View 1 (cartoon, rainbow, N blue to C red):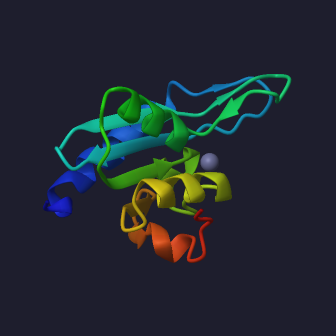
View 2: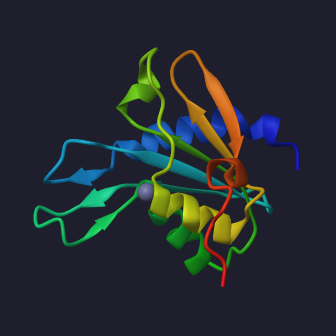
View 3: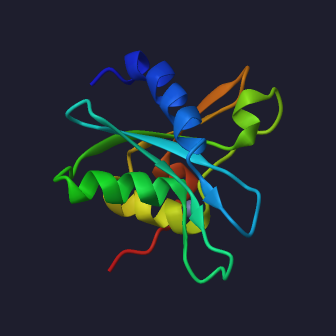
Length: 133
Ligand code: ZN
C-alpha cells in the first residue's frame, strides 16, 4: 500500500474527528484517523467523563470502531490535538495507546503533524519494548 497518497486524507480526517471529542473534565481534545490495509479510514475522538472513571483516547475509539466492523490489519494512524492547526507542538499517542497500537501492528506508522510539519514514526520506534505475552 502506498501510504503517501493517504497522508493528507488521514490528517484531515483526524482534524475533523477531533471536533467530536467529548471532554467534560479536561479541555484537551484529540482526533485520530486509522488507515486499514483495505484502504478504509476509521476516525476517533477522545471521550472523557467528569468523574474520570471512563476515558477513551481518540486512537482507542478509532481502533475499537475498526475492529468491531471486522478490520484486523492496520497500516497507519494520524493523531492530532489542538496543535494540529497551529505551527508548534505536535501530539503522539499516550503509553497505553502505544501498547495497543503495538499489539495491532508494531510496524504501523504513526503520523504526527501540525500545520507546517509532518513526522512519520513506526509504532515499534515509539514503544520498542512493548508488553507481549
Ligand atoms: Zn491514548
